[in-house]
Image 1: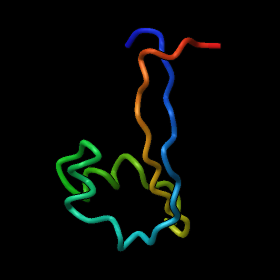
Image 2: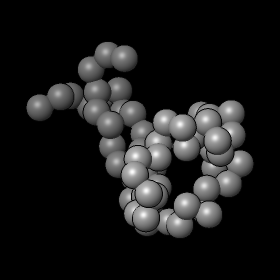
Image 3: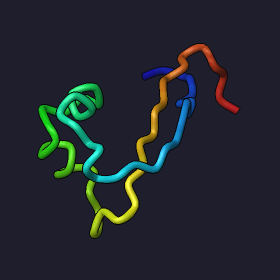
Image 4: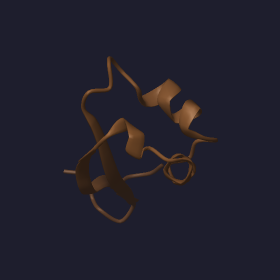
Length: 61
């Protein structure tokens, strides 16, 4: 990646049960188990879905 910024679109607290196969696929994983292997830390009491995108045209500050 060249210069640019990561821009947060939304942050939403969800339940761990809300992590579906489709959400895992959209997030770049093969499935829920693969997502949790990377993303789960601790008991999973607080789970956040953070949607973001890369903006290559933004200049870094």
